[in-house]
Image (cartoon, rainbow, N blue to C red; front, side, top):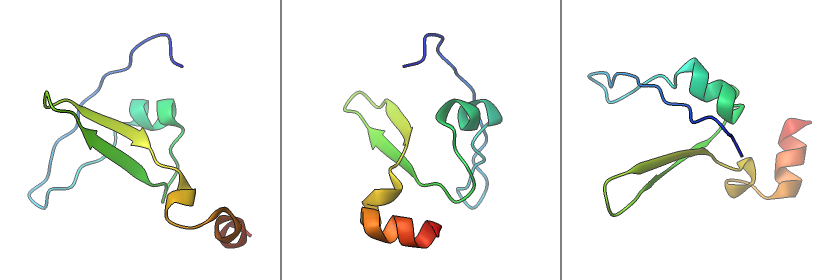
Length: 67
């Protein structure tokens, strides 16, 4: 995985929205409309990761939608 940790921050808006910082988007190779996944650990730590597009649709449907 990554050898150098990347850390950044963003602000939560009044509508509870935020922008994923460019450094994080680059590290996770996120593109527009990509899905992201959040996991909250018991110690309050949040793990933010790129979600598989196949979790919403099966692999055949993903290939069709990308066509």
